[in-house]
Amino acid sequence: MQNRITLLLVILLLHFPVLSQTVYPTDYFQSPVGVGLSLVGNFGEIRPNHFHAGFDIRTGGHEGVVVSSIADGYVSRIKISSTGYGKAIYITHPNGFTSLYGHLQRYTKEIADVASQIQYATESFEIDTLLSPTLLPVKKGQQIAFSGNSGSSSGPHLHFEMRDTKTEKPVNPYEFGFKIPDETTPKIIQLAIFTIGKTASINGKQTIKKIKPVFTKNKYSITTADTITVNGEIGFGIECYDTENSSTNHNGVFSIELQMDKKRIYYHELETFSFDNTRYVNAHIAYPEKIKHNEVIQKCFVAKNNKLEIYKDVVNGGIINFTDDSVHLIKYMVKDFVGNTSEIQLKVKSKLSVKLKPNNLVSNSIPFDCLQENKFENEEIQITIPALALYDDINFVYSKTLDLKAPYAPLHHIQNEEITSQKSYSLSIKAIKLPDSLQNKACIISISNNRKVIYQGGDYKDGWVTTRTKTFGNFTIAIDNIPPVVNPQFKMPDKNNVDLTKTKTIRFKAKDALSGIKKYKATIDDKWVLCEYELKSDLLYYTFDDKIKSGEHTFKLEVSDDKDNITKLSFKFKR
Image 1 (cartoon, helix red, strand yellow):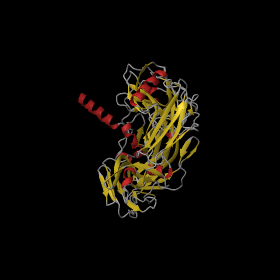
Image 2: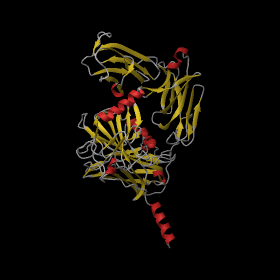
Image 3: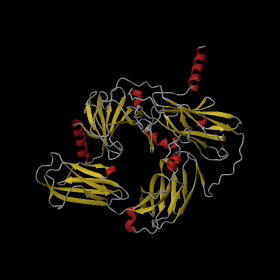
Image 4: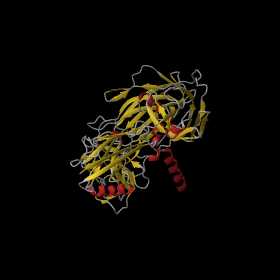
């Protein structure tokens, strides 16, 4: 009898959706900014090539807001970068979680001194260092920094994350009891229906069908008078977002559920995910619609190569095979973290069979299986795409055209911009009439459909330029032999006599036209000094400290790009 009960419980557990089993402390942590929280971005919000991993907290549109540790712990990591989170602090807490504070303006003195020591020891502005538990202990509510706009931030705010210390996975901060006033329901922008199989159809065509709902009397509904007929393997999707009280920011929703005839077909929720898998967001959304129309449609079906952990209850990958002659009720349920819910229903008419014209595939297309390694090569190009790089199987297409602006190779058209890959693939292009003197300056560039040039890197060897990339589209060979441009942002009428006696900070605009700035070095009297770099504003700057005494000194700056083109600047100044 006991064995029967145990077996029944196992069956029941396997039948029901897998929901979060983790219990998070909800009264352990305090706010990192000491005031009521208001967000400009939340956990799980869809960003380019990743899910947002925390809260973007408003700081009143300015920098310098006091940032405090949310609980006792120790500063376990200091990371400073010209991109990403900029100046960031990680604090490990004794209860198994780590908090992260990013885009900071500056640290408090004790932490800043440790960071500076590491930077001078490594002679590098950018650092990423793990610290011992005894070096920088902190108490709950202790100030650790001031909010800022460093790194890839597009405006002043505090980026805040919670992570599982052991796995380093980010966890939705809502789970820890941080209160955000929110009584508004998620907004539904549009629905989408996709044909999956080769014989599938929507209204007799193999296409994507988009439907704009209306919102009246606090309810979403479909007003289209046309009957939507479906046949074969069909997928559904939805474009939606969430807001909080007194805010119009388009934040992410917590969960999406799809039902057919009152049975759950698909469900995901954003409690946590792995940084290793966050790029699979490109498989989660209808990526071609993002590229073509800037629409973020979340697919309620799972791509063949999609390893995201957010999917909790999915039947047949979320794909529905319509083979009967009946009307079916499709229902979407979209929720935010506190449970505010928006629903919408859609009726579709399933047909037994539909006659379709055969697909007009390009004659030279080649089937690529996303689970296998795929290669394409001829006398001018070599492409190797590793297994599990593509999100779905594709019909690979290649062509080339001559471009007078690209004298060292044709313009190679590799698939199109509407797909991307999870992992980098190898791309080699044969160089044509490339002088020996320019071989070390050769690189591969991509040219978007709107003619934007994007540096893809690469090195020359034995007549070929090879790089690794995750994008598809139009590629050719270019030359970068132009050094970066460095312009002082202060008066320098005589480089042998610059008066900096009253100057706290000296600034330079440093920009490179193609391959980008790779490294730089600043010295005073031939000793390395800390020069900070803001990539988004092309700004290099040095702030004087007590180490530079009164008198005459020599400042030198060297800036090089990814192709080792170097610009040197030198001047004498007095303090």
